[in-house]
Image (tube, rainbow, N blue to C red; front, side, top):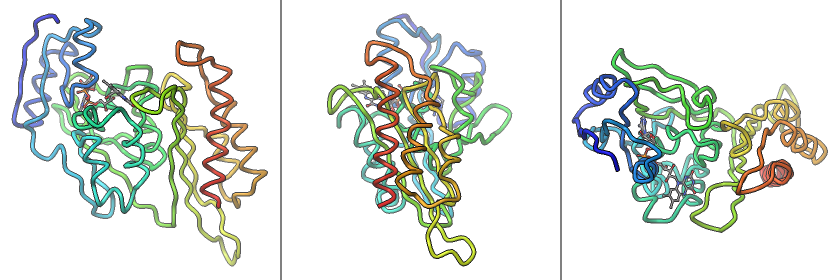
Length: 288
Ligand SMILES: Cc1cc2nc3c(=O)[nH]c(=O)nc-3n(C[C@H](O)[C@H](O)[C@H](O)COP(=O)(O)OP(=O)(O)OC[C@H]3O[C@@H](n4cnc5c(N)ncnc54)[C@H](O)[C@@H]3O)c2cc1C
């Protein structure tokens, strides 16, 4: 590992300023489960590492009209949070699918998103839940819909000096269901070959007897340079009941919208097929 300067500031403002001073050559440290491995492999050689561990409030979970999820909340905290299990169980279920218990004790939700891997498991369910990212920098804060956070493999909208502070997840007005399914080679400790997050909010329109899908999100992971909304597939379902025909049509269109590549984990062809299967299966289950 190359030598680097290490900082552990007590405030977010100080952490931002240090990272800004290094002008893109510094990295924030949360759980270190991505960062330290890449540094040991010499894939990343930051000149400064800025630990976020002493900063108060970054690992808070609170519900007040919306869920506020601190960027330094670990995957194990998500699994054990009564608030999350009661209101957004899909997040706990997703965290449980990731890595193993030791890694989950360190790995954070913010690190998972800021690493900006196309296969980051927390991204599809959080995007499906309309999460927004609160980003702190030297000039103050800005809020970015998670949909717009990722710009390429390993790249997010974060500028030098910017730190993800927390995620805001709105509480839906109608009854909703959300799920995430992940296809991996092994049942544990593996990165997704394909991941699909699905969200449906159902209500009745006018005097309608039959419930319809008032909102829907389908988010694909590991099949494009960034986590991807299957917006054409969503349009097939929005405003209609979840019939078998519509679900099958939407799943086929979601597969068309994927932009998978061949790599060591899977062929592009197989990934596309699996997008259709995982989308259809989850929509059928949510529609039951
Ligand atoms: C054995 C093993 C299994 C794994 N399994 C999975 C899996 O199943 N699914 C999956 O998605 N991932 C998996 N991972 C990857 C990793 O554990 C996760 O991505 C984890 O959530 C990263 O969080 P972290 O806190 O450790 O991030 P770190 O390593 O601390 O940081 C990762 C990157 O994000 C930046 N960063 C971190 N926090 C912030 C912030 N608040 N603001 C700005 N930048 C920040 C860092 O500078 C760094 O560039 C696995 C890793 C290992 C080692």
